[in-house]
Amino acid sequence: MITVWGGVGIGLVWGWLLALVSRGVWQERPFRHVAYLFLATLILSLQIFLFTGINTLSIFLFSSLLAFLIHLSWQSQIRQQRTKHRRQ
Image 1: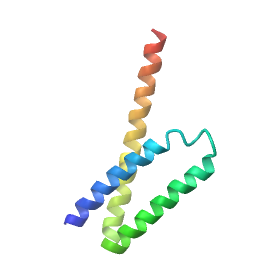
Image 2: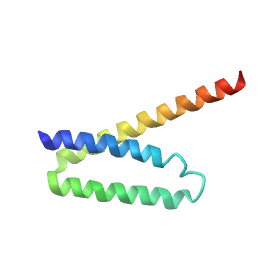
Image 3: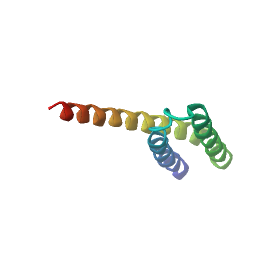
Image 4: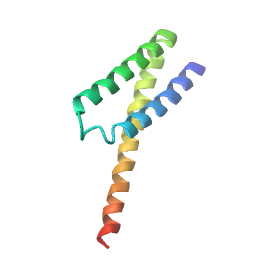
């Protein structure tokens, strides 16, 4: 059970960090940056799989994706509020 919660925790943090890091990636050398982020995620996923198994890996990947999407949504809302306040 502790491995499941560990997978959720690591996944949430990793997804949040990926969204934070990828914020400026698309402007300069996008392919290289995306490849590095994918490689880091692959290495982390391999470690989780080797230490805990496929169940925790799937939980990790799901929670990473969830945190990534939530963070992107949050960033989008902040950008919309900034542009709305600048127009006023």
